[in-house]
Length: 434
Image (tube, rainbow, N blue to C red):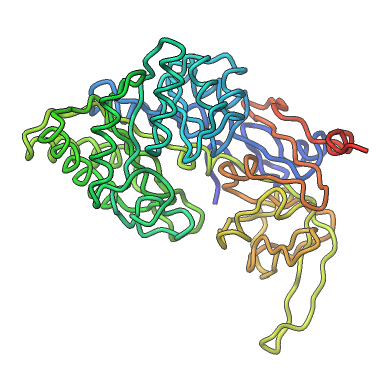
């Protein structure tokens, strides 16, 4: 599968943004994250325009946890997106990128005082309140500064989004938000409205990731409007803004068929409007926080292939292991979630895939990247491209086995620029105190 601006050139090499991946690997080394800059920018614009075409002043915020660096923050902001962050580190990087902080939302189920103080100091646009303890502390800190912080209350709507347990976040049994079903969310909303230092303008919910159907989003719209009806009847409060999180899936496998952006926008916007009208509520402003569905398909990781071994398999046959010069330290998701990824040989991209192999990383673990991949018969020194690694690879990378985290390159119209440099041995040793 090819994504974004990817093509196969006359030499049979994979190109991204007009850049030959073989040349990118030669110049920048491997493993290497490559992002399709032109396609990324267009995807951001398409997301914003899909919602703007059907709703009044929607907020489309890029979920920076999916892929965070200054270049991406600036690109998303220039494309007209807001941003959401989930830690002090993410907030500080976004601030360093020089984008408008009034268009940033701070998330997190445990925001320490230093996180909240930084948000107040920087003049952040919204705080997504995740607990009773949090809004009490936020109120105290805001009052001390003589400000009122615009906020939204994160609620847990009790929805199973039919995705992996580890990335399903809308159920009752979750660390995120305050439960609607037990009445806890309504009680929290009432108290929050009574506190100085907080200007509560709306609610937030996020039900999970890699969702490939529209039904969960439509169900979420109904649950949130039920909650807002209760809020109007008891404390007499109406939400200006309702944020439905992110979660739209991408195509990791041939069978994955995510909805088009226009369909997603229509399902959410029409769902909120319909459900609000049926309850006699005013239709609130709508917010959405895509992450994976912006960057996932538009990134790839390049690896050098090393040793190749054919060994007896448990079923009495044989299996061929192809080792690459990266693995779980630059992509932990196969180990964490059994996440699948499409692959091809970047230096022989036009050849037919005729051989089944297992792609293994070089860490001191089993470290299986791809359990069963079809490739042209690979050779040591070939260049492997693992597709759809734009989301949660760079941001989840580690230094396991003291490996260096890879560089990140943006490719556009035949030119490549390194936006995150490769770590060095000096970087890793700098934190170690004798």
